[in-house]
Amino acid sequence: MVDFTNKVVAITGGTDGIGKALVDLFLQQGARVATCGRNHDKLYQLQRLYINMPLHVVSADVSKESECYAFIKSVIETFGTVDILINNAGVSMRAMFKDLDLATIRTLMDVNFWGSVYCTKMALPEIIKNKGTVVGISSVAGFRGLPGRTGYSASKFALHGFLESLRTEIMNEGVNVMWVCPGFTSTNIRNAALNKDARPQGESPMDEEKMMTPEECAHHITKAIKNRDRMLVLTTTGRSTLFMSKFFPSWADKLIRKFYFKNNELVK
Image (cartoon, rainbow, N blue to C red):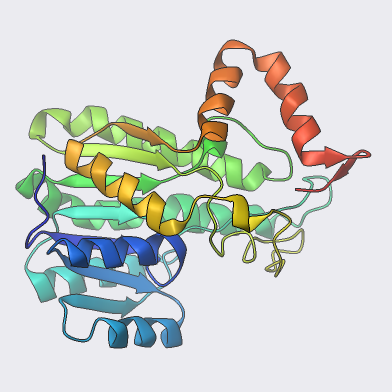
């Protein structure tokens, strides 16, 4: 079991949702935490909230390589090292492929895939030195393509391939690489999801009140990191989707189609 006391934890996208819940939980457990985000006001509010705690915030857009490198460099300069990197920053989408501007998919790949690659590349020497952990916050969409989310699924499939390859490369160096599939969680990701024109849709088609909270999700994630798990799939729906897709793929196609469409129109 990993003790987080004085560990340095770098979390991308820590101003909302799961990322913010992880910042709070790691600070409660004695870690030194660094996070980044694009919204200056939210970063300022976060820093004010934890003003007497070891929190370091940096303004950074993870889709830009130079800003990822600047973030990790700032973490190392501030805290001396990185023990745990959680690639949490991400963006979703909701649009049919036949209708969308390809800029939507480019943005998703830049944030969800390349953002994780950039930060991991910069932090990896310190993580190897410390026999630490690399985490990717992914999705069931990284195992099973979902309608209306072609770019999102593609980016998460790419993330899974990257992390699994990296895990097998460095597993003998004492580093744990893991990926987390939270399932439907009550966060801002659906409100910020891109539409066919690569713009935030500004609303959620889901019933957010019935979903897992970010705080509950964060507790599961920190437990999995402590146990040095390989993969964490949360929610019954997520686990059922993986099972059905692996053993009954044609049936899964029909059930997923029924879940996301009504009268031949995408509704979720």
